[in-house]
Image 1 (cartoon, protein in one colour):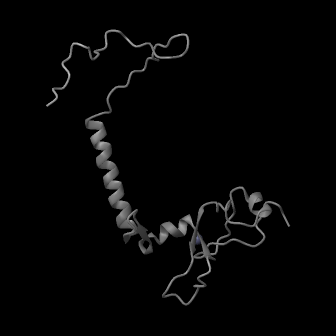
Image 2 (cartoon, rainbow, N blue to C red):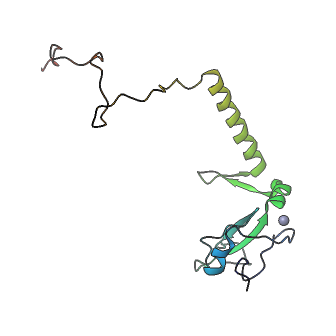
Image 3 (tube, rainbow, N blue to C red):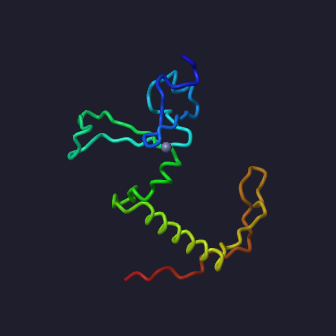
Length: 149
Ligand SMILES: [Zn+2]
């Protein structure tokens, strides 16, 4: 067996194109999916679930499919997006919303740029501690303590 190939052929579920692995030698030495990085494709996994008759062993094992990036793009109107609250949306609609939100934030940053941060290195003493300027306002003992009732 060639050390740089997987022990079985990896293909796109949709178009059947052969899919290579990034760092394929890791896959050949260690037959787990921990270092499984399809090149130009996605690994989509499922434990199965109530409602499917195809795969649902309920034992922690999974079925996986590889789909190349071109097929994901071509059929993105069939995909679902799952947000952090686990709500489902059509993928393309969710991507448009995220892009609009990104543009709004970018526009806000251009209107009000981030405050200028000092570029000079802070002055430090011989031990590496910052030198505090005596001109900084400090609380003084002449301030009145809070009145106690
Ligand atoms: Zn494909």
